[in-house]
Length: 304
Length: 199
Image (cartoon, rainbow over all chains, first blue to last red; front, side, top):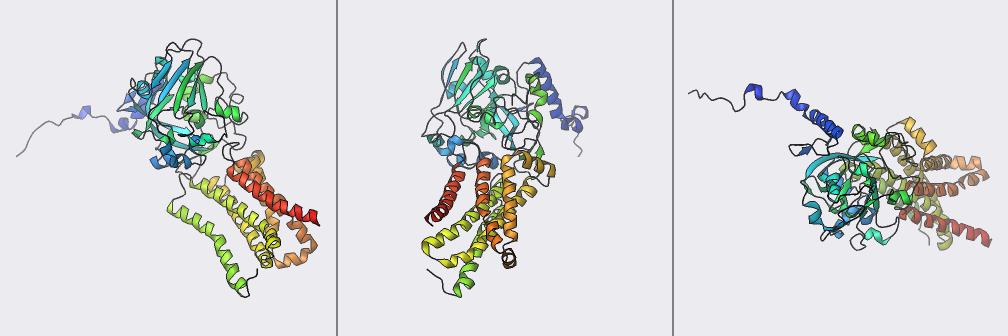
């Protein structure tokens, strides 16, 4: 017997496969328009942000076992080994400085209003290696706007938890504690700037900066401060940890730049974790199209 | 203390030789079984360099140990230890040139010129080279008194090796190991200064 039934999808409704393969290109274009409009709204398609890269994500085990987080130990593997010490509840975040709504917030208060999305970002460490990391979280701008920064807020600074019991690396002082980082306000409000609370769809592990961390993908990794307990709006450029400790090696801006070498090594290339041959490092870590305009007219060699 | 012949030559020395190969075997296994972590090339390069430095320090330990214990036989291990230092230093350099830079000579040359820790590392290797090349009996005989003068290079080159390690480390965060080797080297060199002052 022949059963005649129309198919669920008719021929003209099926997306051409070649077009389907270019879907991210399309979304990226959309993303570009969104940036032009400076709407700051994330474009989400099937839960994945238009800002995500198509690069192959680094395996989870490599991401969580090769970390620079000296509060949890100085070796690359030490943060994973000491991760259990960093208890993340209770956790609170203090917001102060030049804003209309400062206060002390529980982690839940901080996270609750924000729907999470995935961002697959490249991460380039100043040491010359890189990874591709699927973060979950929300745009930093959405968080900062809640506190209504005033016109005096030209910069925002962040601090990591200071607690010798939970952060055994703080028993010694290779750098001044707590770890402090900062962004110019327009950098912080850029749609690429992100607060991560998850990794590979799971809760962010301690060694990756639980319970919440900054991710600024066009800057060297040390800007992306972990385990944040304080957010402060300030008028002057804040003193940031590495730029204070070793000012000739680490700058405030720390934009990924293959043309500006670190004094002790070249920044032209990077080893993507898991790959044998080094890759060429891209200006602004491949995000130049989105962020280069933030720095127009600036001498990137002087402001490294 | 003395080990009776032929046990020293036939057993003890070969045992030290095999023991000196253990780090290489372990690193080889690590590469083979992929247990060197997320960045195996970095781990391999650094481990090989650290073993080169350890063998340099072991080489420098020989005469103080002889003076303290009176165990003269140990002098017969010194050449082998020194050659192992050269062996691991060569592998360390190869690891950098082949695995890390993959023969990117332009980048390597820039590294040598601009990066102080690479400059010092290369210089260390260049100083080590003539010592390895003149470690054979014929060279010793031909060079005569100049042989021991030449081999005094081991002191500055080991200092340079430690400096190479210092300058590689982050300025402040990861200085434990460079500090440890500095202290060990200071003890080994200090003992020599003490001996010289006593004479």
